[in-house]
Image: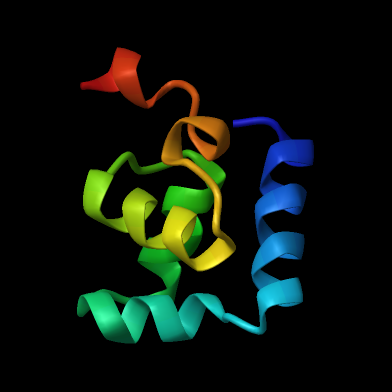
Length: 70
């Protein structure tokens, strides 16, 4: 994933007052795991879904390569 997309996701999370740690805690994973999903290092649908829900956007907008990865 490109750096601009990562910044956009992080910015949207901040605007909503949601941290990566909060998402991680709700999903039972580490903050680092959530960060890796945001960065595109890992591709995990349930974390991508949680991130998309947190920012209020469709998952396909935030992670357009998701369909190709499945």
